[in-house]
Amino acid sequence: MEIKFNKIAFIGLGLIGGSIARAIKKYYPDTEIIAHANHIETIQQAFAEQVISNNEFLSIDELAKADIIFLCSPVKYNIDYIKQLKPYLSANTILTDVGSVKGDIHRAVNELGLSDRFIGGHPMAGSEHTGFEYSSVQLLENAYYVLTTNRDVDSTITSRFKDYIQSLGPIPITLSPEEHDFSTAAISHLPHLISASLVNLVNAEDNEDEILKTIAAGGFRDITRISSSSPIMWQNICLSNRDEILKLMNLYKAQFAKFEKAVSDSDPDELMTLFSTAKDYRDSLPVRSKGALAPSYEFYLDVEDEPGAIAMISLILALNQISIKNIGVLHNREFEQGVLGIEFYEDTAMKDALAILTKRGYTIHTKK
Image (cartoon, rainbow, N blue to C red; front, side):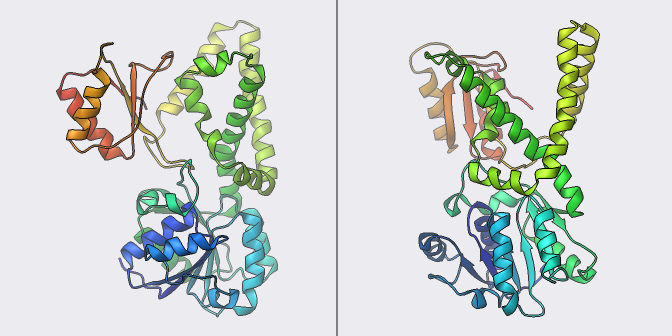
């Protein structure tokens, strides 16, 4: 399905903005894309790669002439940009954003009298890296893309924009701003706070020999991986979604208190119930769905402790033109099977490597 927009502007051209722009260029190569970024180097790189048509900073009134304006800066900055854009907007310009908090920006848009043209957006995709140089067309493919609207937006505009987003590769779903902010607080914002607090706890309790860091196992790495995200971004999220995060933190404390009581009482039945309930729900989650961080494509395998064993595996994969993102011996495998961990850039490469190495007799362990 082809939905035509002639000119699209981006304010902010980092990982998400850059990935959306690349997707538009792929599926709609004739669309004129213009952009503003904080650094001229970003604009020049995007221009050199033929993603955007400008190679210098543009004025606000020039950006306002676009059919769609994607606001890809932190929420507070996006609101400031909307205020600057307002005097220059044409009657048909659609405003949208990509932030992971929706309450603040919807309230600002309502106060500015622009609610009839604003459609909130939140691509549920990302990476531990930031910046235009890490953006890619593949980042959005089959990722959920939440859209938030209000009654002031004409249904035909919403439907057209939803179809346009879907044509770029994501799977659009529609929520109210309130539903969105509670949902993301539960499945994204709270986990980041738990992850960061756990890392800070281990850091504070480690000794001068850094024993805890040295023996950190797969379970710790998995649950704390999201702590590598941008501190600035998460500072903004906590300030913007304060009420919903606090609500979820209180709910989490109540859940954690159940574990605390069961451990304190040495209650085997309650412990079994709590862990079994968590396992059943966790096992029911969709496999490899995209979230705030891109999924990790990895598996583990057994190898003999002999010279050249790891080199042989690398050679086998290289001869089959399979690129490895990371490879390493696991020194603590309390929660992992296999002595060697291999991570790939994409799902297809992982599956190809799994088939090739299995055929050669290697024992491979995967995880959900």
